[in-house]
Length: 163
Image 1 (cartoon, helix red, strand yellow):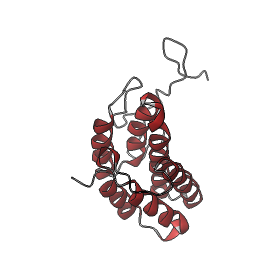
Image 2 (image 1 turned 90 degrees about the horizontal axis):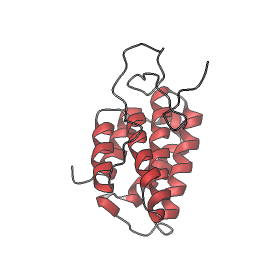
Image 3 (image 1 turned 60 degrees about the vertical axis):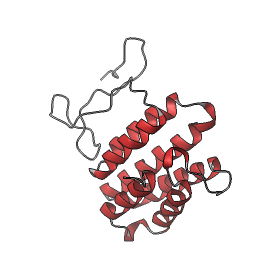
Image 4 (image 1 turned 90 degrees about the vertical axis):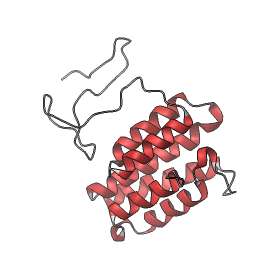
């Protein structure tokens, strides 16, 4: 089967997805996807990712964070990429893949930590990066004991503490 591509030839995945981000058969009814051309600003990214996490949809929050990562200023890209990886880790946790969860939570936390200047207090766009890094490392230390719903809610609260 050939890969889905956009008009410029870039790979795209047009398959529908379920609420956990798992691909569904072509033609099946899935949940709404983040458009491929979505390019949100920083504040919009935080608001939308927090909303999706609040709905228990970390895979879709990852897509929003990934859209920002691909369009962010160079000095913010590692932060957005790390946050997207943390959300993929939460997705793995939600799906019961504890090994994948631990790997992605650690990778994302390390990337965000590196962006925050070695753990200094940073709150770009109101996010508690230090808290997110701590929570992700804590979850990664023993993902089998983590409650996915509680983990998602905790990261959402640190992503957008003002909500």
